[in-house]
Image: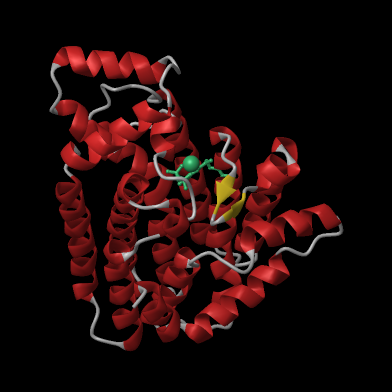
Amino acid sequence: MDPFRLILSNNLEHFEGINTELERALSSRVGLIEDIGSHSLLGHGKRLRPLLFVLSCQLCGYEGEDSYLLSTIFELIHTASLLHDDVLDNADVRRKKPSANHLWGNQAAVLEGDFLCLKSSSIALGTNNLTFLKRVIEATTQMTEGQIMELTYTHNWNTSPDEYMEIITYKTAVLLSVACACGAILSGAGPEVEDSLSRFGLNLGIAFQLIDDLLDYTSSQEEFGKPVGKDLREGKITLPLIYTVKGLQRSERERLENLFRNGHAGQEDYDDLIALVISKGGIEKIRNRAKSYVDKAALSLNFFPDSAPKKNLLELNQYIIERTY
Ligand code: FPP
Ligand code: MG
């Protein structure tokens, strides 16, 4: 069974609440904003970040009525970042569909990203909670730092595992972390609770990106919803390639580096390098590394007594390493 089905069936009410609020958040006097927003945001997506927020609120005993509305903050930021990311990457496909930049052009896609990002800030402002707002804005800023860091390491075959880990922590994991931490903040929980949830989200988020980068080599476009080998084509040096490069003779490594860096590589070269990464890229090692982050995340929930939201958070955490798309 598709592991996501379990998550969906155990959180149906939350998915409905989140989707209703997302639809509302898209409303604009400008039709094109709604069209691009619906295409990019509605009817698909795993809603991982809003779900983490809603479950964290429940875990902390939040009794207010705003958890679905506020959960959209994290999906709006995420979708805005993907709109910008697809422009940066010149990507044609996102979530099994043509990307927004492909359909409407770069300018409209960037502006839509701006709209969604700012919409998330006005929703966050509605909490009148400066700590909440500060965490959201800090996370968004850090995502940009991660993305810029990634840009500076493009085609850099000397990227170390530590540098790679720093990039994925900032560009991906901090948003998942803050979605969890904000559940604690909104509920008025103390710093220890906030810290436990923050660490839970951070470790889960690191595992999420490790698996994302693994699937980029090992999955198929039909399953993954975006082209396989996309990172390599974009000059992104992710952990599977970093491990592969480490095991190569210097001359072979320099030959490959030049071939791919200078844009001289043809389809066959890409296929060969993907095959090499699959055979030598420590795929199992990376899966185990992701698993260790998932285990670390689970440990930070030890702090909480058993409850339904805790069980759902742990299932979501487990799903991260079982997912195939
Ligand atoms: C997708 O990763 C992209 C991110 C995780 C972060 C993108 C962040 C920004 C563009 C900066 C922040 C901007 C805003 C508007 C908040 P990926 O490229 O590894 O995944 P992919 O293969 O799905 O493209
Ligand atoms: Mg990308």
